[in-house]
Figure (spheres, rainbow, N blue to C red):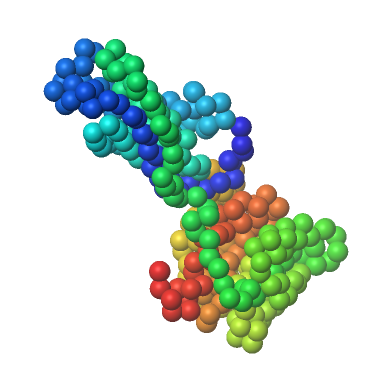
Length: 302
């Protein structure tokens, strides 16, 4: 089973269709409610709903999902019955298999109920029509790479006593996203030095994004949030709310993070935790969703 632990929850939707070929005489019997086993359509609809909710028990590698909605519709022609199933869930992984399974089971249910009167029936196919809601739906493309600074804030790392792992992790992730690392710098936990560099990144270098790591806790030298608040012009409260919510589901210590996020000019500044795991979690939350902010910041709207 694929590990989806680090994925964020989004609204997932999928639409699948199954096509069943039947004789015109069988269609007429269905319309006149003369199938010996009864009207197949309401039974097939219930079967589709049950199949969607129980897909993980049928398909081995499917994750159990908190299904929020299932709909099953029938389009009856002269010789064809088209079954369309729509499934929705707010979760970490898609619902296309649930929609496909539901459509297939609905077709099989109609087949089972009508086989007594029509031995020529044939399920012509089951196909995915549309799916939506994964990270790929939130990707953004840019004509030029975004220019980014990574600022590591730690007395011990600046003094050479500890190795910088979190900053390197950020740098690696940003490069994979196609961004240009304009500067990578390590500073001690000094409020004025942090402020000076954040201002330089925004005002002089006009960078697109600054990610800091470290100094977001409640230790006597943790001043990154204070420095950031004195520099930014507008806060991005939703960003830090999302980071803490995601982190809190994984460690109870996330609530102790005081990181801030905001905008100065056309530069977005985000404080990330100092721990390697905290940074990894934060990057999972930020990207690709944060990329949408730049086009908004540049006047492009939603």
